[in-house]
Amino acid sequence: MEIQNAFQIQWDKTPYPSFTEYFFGKISTHGSNLAIVTTNSRVAVITGTTGQAIFVHLACAIIGCTAVAVNGWSSVDEIWQIVDLSESTHLIVEAAFLQKADDVRRKASMRGGGRIKHVRIIDDVLTTDAISNETKRRITSPDDVQPDALSPISDASESKVENGTEDSCESPPDSTTTAAEFAHRSLIINIQQMSLPLYGPVQPRERFLLPLSLSHIFGAMSAYYALVNGATIYMMAKVTSKTLVDNILTYNVGLHEQIFQQHLYIEVNVSHMTPTMIMWLAMDSTVDHANTNSLRSVIVSGAPIDANLANQAKRKMNLKDLRQSMSIDHFH
Image (cartoon, rainbow, N blue to C red; front, side, top):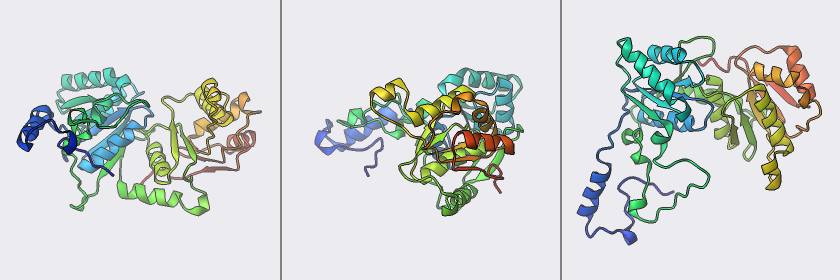
């Protein structure tokens, strides 16, 4: 594995006559990009259901700061209340919610809370290039190097494993505005328990549909659970009854026009959902005659589920495994 940093040298393509000129040239390029996050920072990650949030949480864990997951689809007042209660000092937001973040920062200043120091878009934190499938990461010369060190969050990326401290992340439950803090050790324990062979965990090369929001503990835990077990995650930007049903049927049946033209048939094998999503599936008539044979397991959590709706959804979708995970969103 090649480790990249801002001072990586390509010896056969270096345009600098000496190391001194190369070194000071790099300082002049990256020296003004100061780290905005330290171990004492509290970062509010305001996103929808996007995989980018996972990398921000991991970066915060490496630095040793606390991360607070905030649902970007909430109102400005709800976001501000969570940011205020969690005493967040930095806001990292999805581009679609930048206006809300600016409103939250303005509201905090008006109420005498000048605690928020920076507001950054998540793309600027992760990379200096736009994220796309066509992005080529081949480095041809030192001038083309675009390492993670250019990111404001990664300049302070020093591992805190040796100091014995327990990195933490916070996620606000749906039923209250008070953020619930859970330790990474509890997260690992719960993932290990879910991965026991008795429960039939998601396998490598299987496809995992995650319609949950990462601002909820169940969603964040499910994302790490799938990654640890080697599955491929398919995430949804915003979940409604129609989009959930369409995605399940599209991925399993392969009726989507572009997928059909490319002869790619994506089959979802496992999914984690909330009781509301199970109700959508149970009440939707388009599921009656759909072919969902590849969807073998659905785990429900986040709230109690109605047994009748669960049995109806299981029967309509021919599910072999539909279970409710108790207390999965309560870490101790």
